[in-house]
Length: 207
Image (cartoon, rainbow, N blue to C red; front, side, top):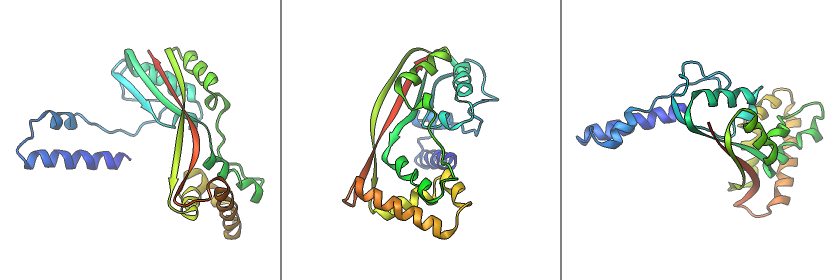
């Protein structure tokens, strides 16, 4: 994702330069874009009260200490600055991945922290971190797919947690896992192309 942003910046500035429009407002905005790879729990190098908005899409709850992420966000935000972060209440595709237990009960996929999978509890988490004017909304989400098998290949072969599980499994076990997922996916949505459903939690708070 960072590489994509850098490529987009380079392409945008190059197009402005070739058109002789390098001093345009859009070019100036792109010149201000800076990418860094940091630990969400320790934003070293980002000054206190230096950022107006922090946006975190489906990330804080995957760290070992989400409260540290919230406290760091609060630290770098300007007074009145806004944090927007998301989590999952649940989804059909996460349920599909849970079928791993039917093949290898000893292996456990990542589980959503309870405090980050319920709207009321997530609201309390932000308030505990001293955010104010906190609001949490449930938002319906769809995951579209062309073929059932292609979706399952993506979930099993491309997602980091699934890749880690596959390293502990035989080829036959992975095949069985995928077969179970495809069958359940067809129960959720028989048609292809189609989509699976989920609920995301959008939390907003102000410093």
